[in-house]
Amino acid sequence: MSIYHMFNIKIAEKLGMVEAVLLDNIERTINKHSANGENFHKGKYWIYDSSKSFAEIFTYLSRQQISRALKRLVDDGWLIKDNFNTDKFDRTSWYALSDKFISEFKDWGLK
Image 1: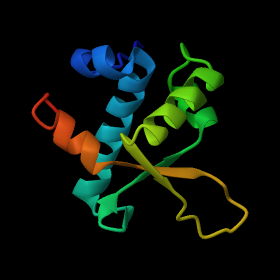
Image 2: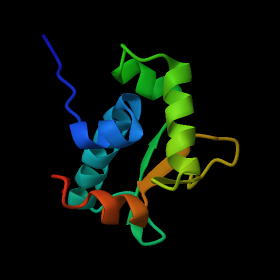
Image 3: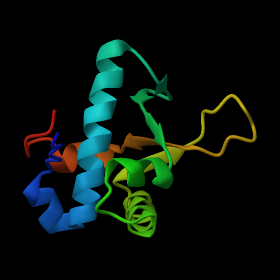
Image 4: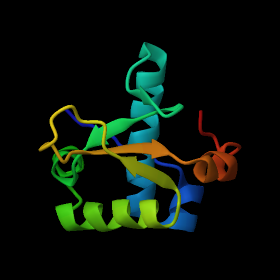
């Protein structure tokens, strides 16, 4: 079975291919959470995942590539990072699309 991962080429041109791949996955998952009324905190829907989990999904990307891309996306204000885990020792990161991302890319085919 073949799995295709799509991403927005305009976002890839602006932010990078790895970033576009991750943002597409995050956006799709957040849309699912929104439709199901799940993972809503601080006025936004969130996805929680680790670079290890992303690397299992995107086997063509290294964990380091994913970690660096996520850090850039957060540092540059495209994603928001937080922690809503109930276990204080669970350091799994939670990500939401930032208002900057939504306003910049809302007309680029994102839902």
